Structure formats: C-alpha cells, structure tokens
Length: 286
Image (cartoon, rainbow, N blue to C red):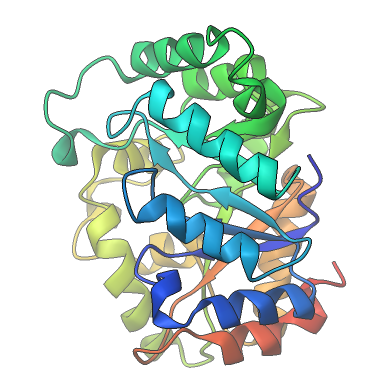
C-alpha cells in the first residue's frame, strides 16, 4: 500500500456534487498522494468515492472512516469490489468504531470491529478487495492498534499529538502502515490560530474515545474543557506559517508515521485549496 508521504484528509462537508472533484484533480496535480474522505457506502456516499476516483488518475482514495456500526460487510464488500474493478488498486478501506454518544446501542467496540473483520474475511473470496492488505483501522488505544497490526495493513489515527504517533509505532512494530491525520491552521497569529482551532477541537473533546486517548498522554480536565487549553490545542493542531506546519509533519514522521494526511481548516466557507497549494512545495519535499 503506497500512500506516499503526505496526503489530504477530505471532510464529509466537501461532497463531490458541489464541484469539489475539480479540487481533487488539482490536489493530485500538486503531488499529494492520497485523498482521505469521511463517509460510508450508504446511497450517495459511495458515489462520492467514485467521483473522487474518476476525477483523478493515480492518487489513492481512502475512506477515513467507514463506521462499522453504520453498514455491514455484505454492503461494503461489493461496493469496494465495484470500485476496484473500475479503478484497480486505488481505493483503500478505512474502518472505525465511531463513538458512543453518536451510535445507538454502542457496546464492546473492539469485539464489534473484530467481528466485522471476521465477516469480511469469510466472504468466500468476494472480500479480496477488502482483505488485510487493503484496509486500515482508525485506532487509538492499545487493543485497537494491535488489531490494526494483526488484521489490517495498519492504522489511521485521528486527532492525535506526536506522542501518540510514537506510541502507536511501538505497538504496530515495523511494517504496518501508520497514517495519522494532522489538522492545520495556516495562521501566524497565536490568538487567531487558536480561536479557529477551537472551532474544530471543541466538538471532538466531547467524544470519550478522543478525550480518553489524550488523557493517556497527560492531558487533564483543565486541558479538555472550553475547546481545549492552549497546550492541548497546540499539540493536536499544527498552526503557524508553512515552515511551522512542515516542522510538525516532520515530527510525526520522525516519531514513526509513514504517511501524514493533513486537514486544513478553512478561514472562510470555501474549500481551502489555496492553503494546500501554499503548503505543497514544503510538505511534499519531506
């Protein structure tokens, strides 16, 4: 699975039917090697992945992530097989267990993921396109990281500091792909940068999986409230100029990341393609 060094994490709010497939083509031309997009395989969303693939020629498109509570292996496998038939080797399935506050009857997430993978692997050859080498898991804690190591090509952690990347690598060991997401605010002023960053961090800090993971790295109640302390915001969001963002990507790489997918927060409503243009020469040289 060759994701390259740097990719783009594509929020669910940017759908292919709003003209953003033109952006996908430009991101590929700029040199980004993978486009990660949230979404699933319910009607309309699978078409989103297909449009991103059809708008590009060689970039990898990865789901980041498909919730194992929102679909079934019997839905996922044929949908991915269809993408594989039309765009060989260009789609990677990212799977995750989501979060208790937004999933009805949430329980035993590790067991749920293991059962989902068992079902994919038991599809009598029909699941080859979603086999171990063609899927990654959204993993934070030690048990899910171990599952990503043993049952997938690797892990795609989200909303994590550099310390988590080093921690994840110790569990994954050598070989499995480690592809963390890094949120970016291209703004030099600390007050303005953190203000924008908190529009992003505030919601995620209410989700127990993310909050619990940050506690693992020494963040306490005072860090997790009101959108996050300065220390927490600075740890999970790379803000500043191009050099500052590039420095953070290098830190993740040095800590063990094979691939880093960046998510630039827009300062206005439009997709922040100008920021990706500005970042590309520095990031793609890492």
